[in-house]
Image 1: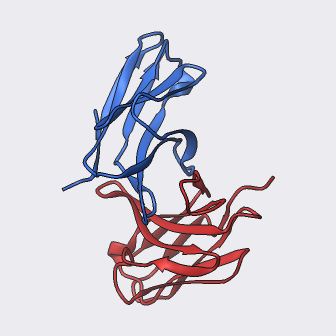
Image 2: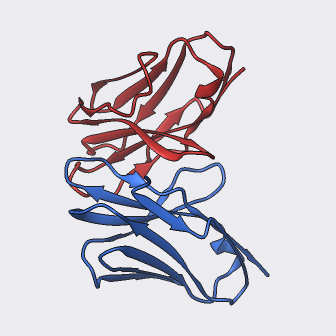
Length: 109
Length: 114
């Protein structure tokens, strides 16, 4: 059973059409939840770390939130340059980051 | 500030050949990670080092895979002999420490084994 599940697998939006990506996790003792952005042919690029339920982080059109079972990445008024794969990862004590399979976002103008 | 540097960017080899992937982490980072990415399985941890010492190699698929970190600025991942199912993108990442610091990834090595 996957410990980190992301949905949807793929999302197509029109420019300006806001939406949310979901990351749910089943582990206990979460030490941190990470969001990354990955462009084709590149390595994942760090966006945010969330440490506790109720925490929120923002960067430009992106806002990440965390509950005890899931995290959301909200994208407000997206632009074509926001097209990428967004990866979620969790950190448990004593382990390296465990990644979900990602959501591939396409934003068309 | 140079990021994590991996070489080569692309590697095409025949089944049975030895493959060596190389990584230079960010200076001052003391944790280094090797991940493998495929469409089917996503990003999977192979092994990670802390202060040049392997901490967790439970993700290494089998004895054909080995990794070394002879010093703080260099690591290698070796596959011998290579098989077609090893075809994937291999990423190296480093972090300031192993305690919840973000990972910084290189741009990967795309390995194709024919």
